[in-house]
Image 1 (cartoon, each protein chain N blue to C red):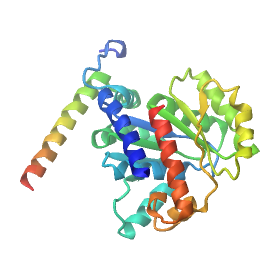
Image 2: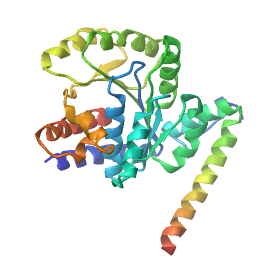
Image 3: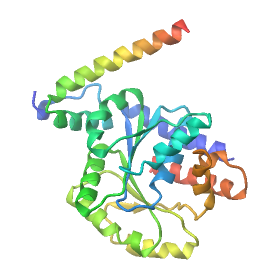
Image 4: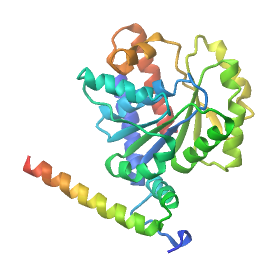
Length: 55
Length: 239
């Protein structure tokens, strides 16, 4: 997907800017990077929630 | 009184940030050394951390990294809260930010002193691409004011729409501000903040005292410093 078609659904504001620059720097697709980022963030969030629950 | 003022400012700002549902990036720029970038960034970070906002300061002041050193001093002296400061060269910033953006809602980037006009331009370009707001502290002296036109020129050339502020710093008396206000009418991108930081030793003393913020010092001068800093914090965030 080209950058022009990229639709940041859950990624807004500066997060979008950050990912856009990182994608350009790494030469990767912005959409792929954004999907990976959201997935990892969700995982980390879940992990934190579980740690809190178990504490 | 101070806490109430701060809480109101923080609440307004948090609401806006939650609405935008993203990260907030504040770029602190200025190619010259001794402008007050560390004083500003470090105290700004402390306020955010104090109010439990996940915030980090990325110290890109290549070769100097004063903020990172002050945070390390603080950690060594077991002073809480710990100040999340990460030192890294500007070149690594783009790659490192996605990871930081997962952990921290607010990212303050302190761009360092630059050796030449070209690297100053590159740093400002990156700041424009990344930031929600740009801050350039400046002393009301001829050498500092001389740096304004080139920074302004770069913002215009890059078609920047990012709100950018010049913060008068180390002001001994109000009349000194005329040197900055003199160029104000020519500025299209930068806005000079109404609030200025006075020339108070406590700004330097606090940092040298195990990496403390001005909010962790007692006395008349620190109280004045706290008051003006909170006003500045409010002005920048809510503008």
